[in-house]
Amino acid sequence: MAARPHIVDGRKNGKDDLVTKRISTSRPTSGYSPQTSPDQLSVGTATASSVDDSPLLALEKQFNAISAELLAVQRLRRNQNRSRSPAAHPPEQATIKSGVGEHTFDEFATRRIESVLTRLYPIEQAIMRTPASTIAGLGVKARHAAYVLSQHWEVPIDRIDWDARAVRLLIEAICDVAHTPLLLRNSRDD
Image (cartoon, rainbow, N blue to C red; front, side):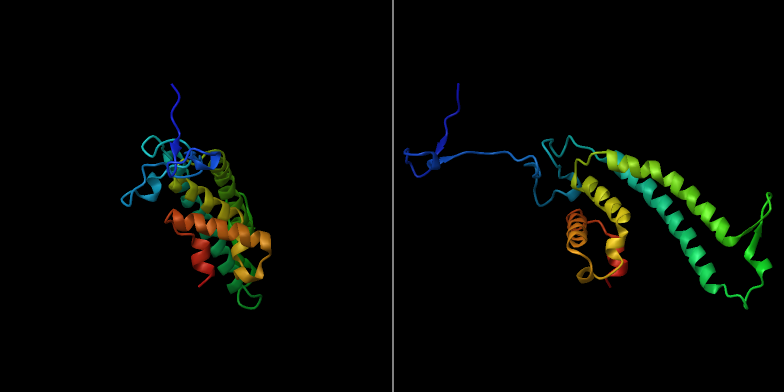
């Protein structure tokens, strides 16, 4: 048995009088209420109660921990390079002795950065492969995209090209909707 269409204003004289209900797969599901948190909203056709972005959220925790380690090594390297001047430190102080031989601090830091990046790579790949089902999951993917495209936050937004500005504003909008901080924006746009 076919469903009867809803008629507007009681008229039955044309297709414009029919109200049809279309379901969009890009809108949050109908379970939204003011008490619904952003991470409970789903993207797509699944309901908010049936989706689970816990794999993405777990990947983000791993990504954040390894990224923090990477930033610490990069800061240490940068600080070492700033404080190093030919007159201030004799060459023998700029070396590190290991079981294999002597290495400069810069070589040691480079090896450490490469090691951290090697551990980070599969996590990044998994974040990109894992689909997002909620706004929280979409936030994870947006923050990762910001990390990959961090050069878009290195200068004020009015000094980057149109394409970079569009990407940056989209990522920032997703992070705002997901109520998750985008550290790049917070640290560079003060």
